[in-house]
Structures are given as C-alpha cells and as structure tokens.
Length: 558
Ligand code: ADP
Image (tube, rainbow, N blue to C red; front, side, top):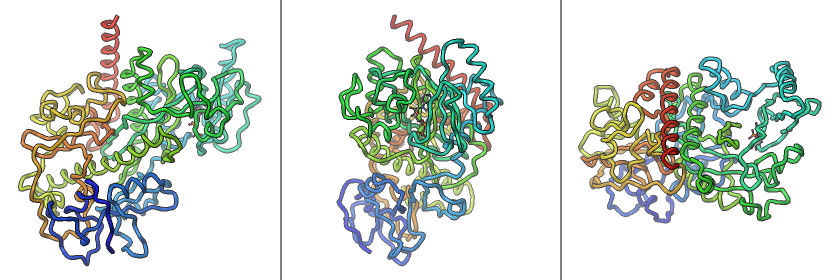
C-alpha cells in the first residue's frame, strides 16, 4: 500500500528516515535524511473507532500519519489508538512497544464525581483538611445522606435568615445533564448515585457572567508520576447574568457550552464577554491583569490543585506502559480569587464549535502528540542507559539515532552539570545556561516558581538545534519502531541544546509544561514508590514561598 503525502516539514521528517508500524515483509530501508520521500516508507499509523474526535484525526493526518485500515493491515500495525472510551485491561497488557493508548487504566477514580470526592476526602483525612479545601464540601448520595441533612440544618441555623445554596450532580453524567441547584432541601430530588456539593455562590464574574476554566492536563505516567499542564485552555461562560434569585435558570448558573450554545443570548454581545460563550485562557488572564490581579499567583494555585488531585489517586492506579491520559479540569474561581475544583473530565470535549475551540483544541492535539514523543524519548533514553549498563536487550533508540555517542541522561536526573532546578524548586543556574534560547523549556521548576511561570500568553520559544546529526543511516531493518524513533526529530518537539550539542528533551512540549515532579526532592519521592507525605511537604514549602514572593511584589508595587 502506498500513501500520497502533502510534503510538509513534519511529513518530510516522517518520511525521511523513520519507520513505524510497518509491514515486516518490506525491504530494509536506508535512513538517509536527504533521501527524497519514497514509496517504500510508510507514515505512522493511528487507529480510531467511531468515538474518536474529528480533530484528532485531522491533526494526525496533517502531521503525516495514516489511518489504520483493518482490511489491509495486520492487527498490530498501528502506533496510536485514540478513542473516547477506556481500554480493557487486556488491551493494556497486550500493547506492543511501538504502540500507545490514549487512556491509562484506573483514571475514572478522578473522573467520576463520587470517586473523586472519595479520594480527595481520604487525602483530607490523611494529610489535613486545609490541604484539600479546594474541593467544595461534597456528599456522596445515597451513602452520605444523613451527613448532608445534618450539615444542611447546621448551616441553616448559622446563617439564620440567609439562604444556603447546594448543587446536586449525577455522578456519571456530563454536560450539565441532571443538575439541580437548590437552597431548600424540599427541592432536592435524586435517583441514581449523585453528589451534593456546596454551591459556590460568589463566583468571579466577568461582566456580570459566571465562568469556569477548562484546564488541560496530561498524565504521561503514574509510576513514576509525571504530570504536564497545558498553558492554554478555555474559559466557559454562562450566557445570562448571574442571579441567585433564580436558581432554575441554567443559562445563568451552569457554564457548560453544550447548554449555553442553545441559549437565546448565545449570539448576543454580552457585557465584557462579547458574543458566544468561550474565551481562551490567554484572553482571560490578560483581562485579569487589566484589573491588577496577580494572575501568576492564581495560575500557581491552579497548578497546586492539579498536582494534589492527581496525587490522590496515583498510589492506587495500576501500572500500565505506553499510555497517557488527557484530562480536563473544571476550575471555578471565586471573587476572592480562590480556585475550586468542580470536576475532572475524562476525554474532555474536542468538538470545534467556535473560534476559541479551534485555536485551543487543534494546537492541544498537536502538542499532545509532541508530548508523547518527548515521553517516549525519555523512556527510550532510560532503556538505552540500562542497556549500556549491561541489561539485556538492545536499545532501538540508540541504534536508530546512531549518532556515535551515548545519549544523555535526563537533565533533571543529574544533580551536577545538567541540573535543571535547584533543591527548592528555584531555577538552577546551569539549567538556564544550558538552554539559553529556551529557558522555560529546560526547567521543570518553571511551572511553579514565581520567576519563571507565566500563565498562557504566547507560544513558547522553540529551541533550535545548534548542530544536526547528519548521518542517520540505519542499515538494519527494525520491523516496528516506536513513536519517538519515528518522530523524535519532528518539528515542534521541544528539545534543549546542551553545550555539547546533544539533544536533551526539556520538560516542555509545545504548550505542555511539566508540573510534577517539580524539583529534585519530588523527583526522588516519586521514584521507586510514591512518598506522598514527602511530596506534600515539598508542595507546602513551595506554596509558602510563592505566597511570600507574591506578597513582596505587591508591597513593592505599592
Ligand atoms: P458536568 O459534568 O455535568 O459538566 P460539572 O461538575 O462540571 O458537571 O458542573 C456543571 C457546571 O455547573 C459547571 O461548569 C459549573 O458552571 C456549575 N457548577 C458545578 N459545581 C458547582 C459548584 N459547586 N458551585 C458552583 N457552580 C458549580
């Protein structure tokens, strides 16, 4: 089977010397970069089902991938299987080294509202309530019914004549379906498993409209725990003015775009918000800055919410190789600028309904693919290092790159010359100089440290290689090659250039930035088992530092 390509730079790189899930009968090919694209080379292969989002398919095709064809190809000849629903454990167990799945087993612990509440409450019991107070007080029904009733009447007494507000959400539904908001317990009706949660009745309003943030997070592994946050995202608006006097009005209280798109005010030009019901995070943060809000501190708090949330399930998630999980965190900001976690979405919606969707989601998928490459490269480098240390097996990565030199170790695993961050999570000097064009890219601490982190603003600079390896000749046939071998040098993969011109992957792929581990201590505490207590201590230290830095700067500004 021969494919026809539009020769973009990325497809050229695919074509110019990288094999992938290929036909074993094919002739060995020469891996010469300057060779013209030839019919003997095949693009990477993605597998879909009827639930795979359109944008995922179009981005992959744009990047030079081809779609798996069950009639024409062997069952194992694909590199990435992307679908909306989860995979069976057997599918995870049988995944081949050149394949990757877009879900990790066990993540519904985060994405089912009742399970999320249970896990976060468990962490609260272990490590203290203040740490997890970003989750609004939550009761899982029917189990916690009497606890809820007790709390409801207690609050009623305290508030006296004032009303208290609650929201009831089905545990397994999404898109605002089945939600009721109430202040009188008489209006509470529920059938299946659901949660009752304190309704945040002082949301930060833009114009006079409620909004929440959709923050994208990619967990590339739970063992060891590795979390990336996406520095761009969406802000979703209600399309009618916020009004606690009318709790029945979904267009004023729910920010789901599936609801607001069908509202009468969707197209209207709304105060500050404009028409439609979405902004990009970039626009939102610059709006906050115009009000003199410390958007950086807010972003750091959001990062912390994400880490603590994923940390709650990490010890109980089974190990699985070659998979990742792209999650959508729904965060509501109140008028004290406190972020609240509303829920975590499994397979966050990827439909392109407006210009904000198009600009965020297409790039998100591109960057997710970049991140996969980056992650595979890290794994293969680890393999190559252990092979060098006498472990059995051949490192395909080393063979493939064939640059006549050992591959460098991960920058953050070397506390010496390639240290990317210091022990307390502040920028390591050497890390900065090692990657002058791309400081943010090089430093894991960048996400959490005050100096380095910027909420979404612009495209991160891409590091340019100082020297390119010219002869990538691969004389041996490797029948199936993993993603990174095929794409390791594809455009956009964020690689830092070390002084010796070796390629070292930085902890950033496009707009994805590594937020965990964020310093040497958390790196150590997440290898060979997860030392949650230690990680929480480090997080607390960092939060303390960030808050005092923010306070100092505020004083200086005054
Ligand atoms: P779904 O999965 O149905 O979208 P969410 O938990 O995301 O459920 O809730 C839908 C919307 O309801 C949110 O986007 C937000 O606007 C609103 N909402 C949910 N929980 C709360 C809460 N505790 N306080 C205030 N608003 C909430």
